[in-house]
Image (cartoon, rainbow, N blue to C red; front, side):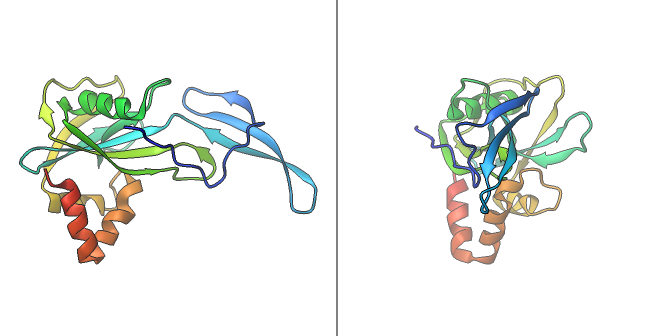
Length: 193
């Protein structure tokens, strides 16, 4: 499966230079010509891309995760995490699914891909993983506490549109579906096993 990386609303030019290298975030700067001909320094963050995975079991159950990380409040969301350097997007989705849920899936559908902010070079890829089967225990990082929360499709829709839901990238899609029966049926079909 070839997966295109979404383009930022403010692409970073090729001549941008990294001025800071962090553990997760790097800072890039470049000189930008303004509309009046003057010049200014622009900057942008860059971080590893992220994958998000919604596993769907053969009975239609969707597995959400209740996650806690140091310094953050517990939150309901999906399995997922950073794409490792040199790792393919689909490979990262399969790895994160296995690590955070102990499941593997027979089919991965790319549901959404976006760069959520113009000031950070960072793409988020959201997958639906059908035919999910338990094959192992969880294999969590030292900074993760995760428990699985099996939900029905209707419960999924309600949780995603709750204020505290962590994967904000898909909220607008689910809200649109709640307002439009045609979109809701399409969403229901997307999550059907």
